Length: 298
Image 1 (spheres, helix red, strand yellow):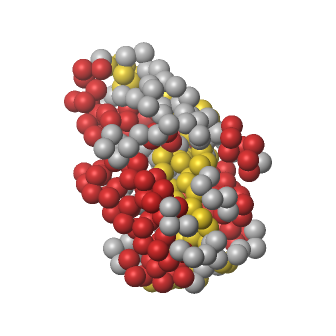
Image 2 (cartoon, one colour):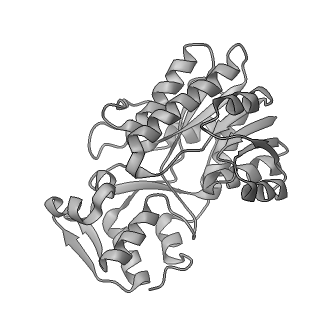
């Protein structure tokens, strides 16, 4: 297959590019900046110049491909709601380019929108929240909208994706701990985040695009939930900082914008995903990668 990828030079995208090419696929990677072109070409991908803001460039890239993986997202949380609505428009544009064909589109979401009951293990086929509740749900609402037009679209929900360099939302938590001089967790620290190693996630995207199952919902979850306390304790050791519990009332003041995530228990299952795609994660766990994190020592 010839696969068009947005976010091809990003943390997850670069791993997906390598996984697809090693499996014999061709990759056309969206790229807006000159400094990313060389890296994409070195990985064996072709470059499609454009951006998320240029919807015509997205449609053009999708028109040249046998399938599309949409990974790009603006992670500036100071404009989170606007970014989510931008993603809605991007998915609508990609869908328009695929109407009338069976070429697959995989869009990216998060496991956090898949559960409305605190502490309940979120499943792929469970209830989801709306964008009025959690803005990131706009991506799946857009997927539903293009599916109604006949587009073969599926959803990949991500947990904390990690290696020894980056770890999803844990990365800004690390910077916060450095700034505050303490590794805090809320109450007993039992709030959990699901996680998966970057190479396992990349393989799952490949399996999903190859299967091209319309309407599928996948959870890229290797570990159903790693507790906030465990994360804080490992980071405390690596950073040489004290570890302590703070109250729920103190969470907003300590974590700031991150409190919308750290205050919630968000475990998730990937049982359906594993059974459907034959995916078995083999990479190291989140705590193992945190214990070996590059450049973390204080």
